[in-house]
Structures are given as C-alpha cells and as structure tokens.
Amino acid sequence: MAVEITNLIPAGHYSTQDVLAIMADFARRDHADPKVQNIVFRVTRDVRDDTSRMLAIRNWILANLTYVKDPPEAKRLFNLSGEHFEHGELEMIKTPTATLETRRYDCDCVATLIAAMLMAIGIQARFAAVKFHNNHTDDEFSHVFAQGYDSRTGTWVTIDPVSYPHEKQMLLDTRSAKTFLVG
Image: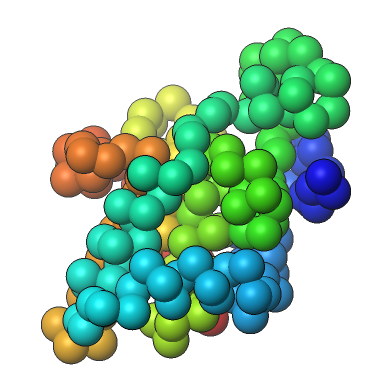
C-alpha cells in the first residue's frame, strides 16, 4: 500500500498557516479523485440539504474509519517511536486518499478528507484551527477541524468526528481560532 503524506513535518519549520495550506492543497487535489467521489456520492445521494449531507459524511467517517493519534500511526507507517511526538516535534498529514486507504485518521487528516468530500459535492469548505489553552504561543493550535458552508442558512457547519458528540462543548472551550478557506 502506497501512502502519500507531506512527510513528517518538524515543528518550528512550518507555521499553522503553512500546515493549513498543505491540508488545503491535498483537499483541492483529491476532491476529484474517484475514491473520494464514489464514497461521498454514495453517502449523500439520498440527502437533499447541505447540512444533512455534511452530517451524513461525518456519520460515515465515524462508522467506517478509526481515530488514531499521530504517534501510533507514524510508528506503524514509518517505524518511528512516540518520543518523536512528545513535545510536538513532528506532525503527520495524510492525503484524503491515503486516509481512505488506511482507514485511520487524526484531526488534520480527517479535516482534509472532509474538505475534499465537501468540495466533491459542491459545498464550500474551510479549516478551523483552535486553541483551548492560553499557554500556547500565537501560532500554536491544539486542534483543527473542517467546516462546510450551508448556503441555504448562510452558516458554517462544524464537522468534527474527533470531538463528536461534544462539538458544541469544544467550541465553547475554544480560546482562539484561525480559519482557512479551502476552496
């Protein structure tokens, strides 16, 4: 199995904006991939409104993929130990197709997959990088998730399998956020 990733990103070499741009590039590229399109069209074909389509995508991910933090996944894919990740020294981002192939994700991988799936069905997507504690530097964020724009209601809908079913509490606990439009 060939798994394409950005490589392991050393901390301090990339800003949050840089990482979000890499994720957006992956989503834009893979949204037209037949693997992504076949799944998203099958999952959303009987659903009419945008918010329900977004929730159908989240529910499919929850039922078919597994949340795994970067250290165990990097160890499995690259034979690395968890010590590489203890202080945020490395980050791993998979392409949407790689996430579908491995069926494993963390927050940035699944946000990238969701953005690609949303774009495949014509829904505008963005990423939200959030900070839960004030002790992070200005460019250190704790979590990232995808949002889709529901043009009927004029609202951004959070789609976050990692925090589900506690998305509302996660948003309340957010100390600061940075959004990045995908496409």
